[in-house]
Amino acid sequence: MFFGTQTINEKGHLEVGGCDTVELAGNHGTPLYVVDEEALRQRCVEYREAFQDKAPSATVAFATKAFLCKSMARLACEAGLHLDVASLGELRLVAEAGVAMEKVTLHGNYKKDEDLEAALDLGVGLVALDSTDEYRRLSQLAAERGIRQRCILRVSPGIDAHTLDAISTGRNDTKFGITVESGAALTAVEECLSMPGIELIGIHSHIGSQILELEPFQLLAAKLMDLLLSAREKTGWNPELVVLGGGLGIQYEESDNPPELRSLAEAIVDGIEREAAARGLETPRIGIEPGRSIVGELGLTLYEIGPIKTVPSADGNTRTYVSVDGGLSDNPRPVMYGSPYPVILANRAGEEASSEVRISGRHCETDTLVPRALLPAPKSGDLLAVQCTGAYNHTMASNYNFFYRPAVVFVEQGKAREVVRRETQEDLLARDLG
Ligand code: LLP
Image (cartoon, rainbow, N blue to C red):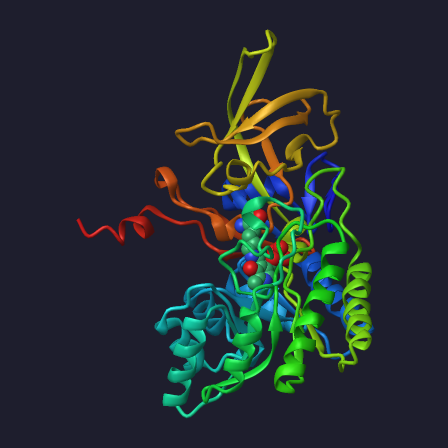
């Protein structure tokens, strides 16, 4: 599979953004995160246009937890997207990137006072309220500053998005948001409307991630409109905004078939319009917050292949373990979620893939990256590209085994720009006070 501008050049090397991946590895070292800048910019614009063509007032906010660096924050904003941040660190990074704070929403199920204070002081556009405790604290902090903070209330609508347990977040049994079914969300709306430091402008729900069907989003539209109807009946509230979170999946495997952006936009916009009309409600402005489906397919990781071992396998055959110079610390997702990844032998991309091997990392545990990869028989010194690592890799990387986190390179039209440098021993030692 090829994504974005990926192609095979005349040397038989994988090329992305007009850059030869073998040269990228040589110039920037491995492991290396490579981001297809032109395709990414185009994807951001396509996302916004898909929604705004259906509903001109719709907003698309990039969920920065999927992938964040200053260049990404600016790229998303220049493409007309808003940003969703989920921590003080993310908030400060996007502030440093110089993006307009009114385009930023602060999320998180446990926002400490320092997080809320920073949001108020920086002037974020929205705070997504996640608990009773939080909105009471926020109201007080805002009132002390003579501010009314624009907020949305995150609710859990009782929807199972049929994705992995760890990333299915819309069920009743979740730590996120305030439950609709028990009536708690309605009570919270009522209370927020009366709080001096809060201007409640809408509701929010994010039901999960790597969702490959449209139906959960349509169900969500109906559930949210039910809540708005009850809220109107109880309080007369006419909210301005409904945010349906992120969650659209990507093609990690040939068999994954994510809906087109225009189909997603149609399902969501038509769903909200239809469900609002059926209840006699005005159609609110629509917001969504995709992360993975913006950047996931447009990043890849380059690794150098090291030791290769063929060993007896449990089924009486043999298995070939191919070790690469990264693993769990730069991509924890296979170990955490059993997530599949497509691979290409980047320096021999044109050769027939006839060997089945297991790709392993170099950590002190069994950190399998790809259990069954089909490649042209790999040799030590070859360059492996693991595709679809644009989301939840750079942002979830760790220093396990004291490995240095990789650099991030943006590539476009034959030019490579290092936007995050590789970590150094000095970076790591700087925190150790001896
Ligand atoms: N909005 C909210 C409030 C979220 O919590 C998330 C993701 C998103 C938007 C973006 O969701 P996306 O479009 O990327 O699916 N570490 C996991 C994913 C966790 C997602 C957490 N929230 C993984 O690697 O699969």
